[in-house]
Length: 232
Length: 127
Image 1 (cartoon, rainbow over the protein chains, first blue to last red):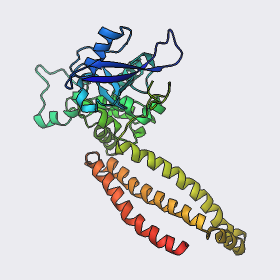
Image 2 (image 1 turned 60 degrees about the horizontal axis):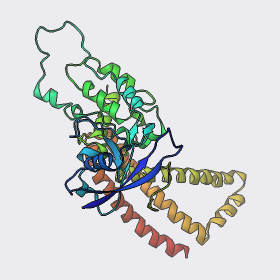
Image 3 (image 1 turned 45 degrees about the vertical axis):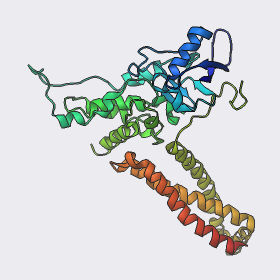
Image 4 (image 1 turned 180 degrees about the horizontal axis):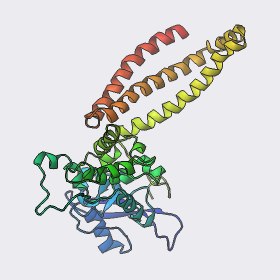
């Protein structure tokens, strides 16, 4: 079948403003949007620029806005998004566009780093593993699934308008350790997220939960951090 | 370039679902209510000037145009009130985020159940 992809192109070296460009490509209904982008890049226009690495929904490189919603191009089948109409593909919103579908992820990663996304321990190092019960592991299971694709953070209206907000992903990253029974840095992380630009900026629009390609209940994780702050 | 697409650099509108649109509506009704309260405080304060001034001000409200504005006011107040309770539940009830969509439906159902009878009764009085 033939589908039309309307892609938001931008090359800062040659033009001042982004513009839309349409491509018609032949795909199978079960192909992914990433396959269509590959076809364009490999056979039609080699200057089309986008990120992808594993191409199987694990590395989190190819988050983009497909038909107005943040998705991974490698997990979105053409047949699932009404291929009879042109499919619009844009870079994710709220981060500076470098070229075509590639954005500068640094502000996003900086927010993630600032919540200390690593195990913090105290006391003597045990001679064997740090044991954890199944129910304690279950407590933060949902937020371990994050692949840092930025689909949630760049779907958040608060993040679009306020670059200082940590964003949903950083809070998910903090949640993963705050509720880990082996971790001792929870109080410090909660203090970081108690900031004016922390969890209290969340307006519960649920865009992040809808956007997450891993099915993480992002808004629920943010709410759990809020509750941990209220009831600490 | 298909004409349906907005021109650069705006990009398309983000297609959020009910959560995003109730948030947008909550903000709009919130600003609306702010301006209503602004006018409301002033007209009520007129009673300090004189009871006659207050009555004169209220008399100007008893027109069909203001009656229609009151329909809009009640629509906004009802939505803002019940969606506000939904937002509180999302933050304070541990299962809130999981049932937010059910609560959105409940907000709309309650809104219709209260707003439709009000409009009927109100417009019967006004016209």
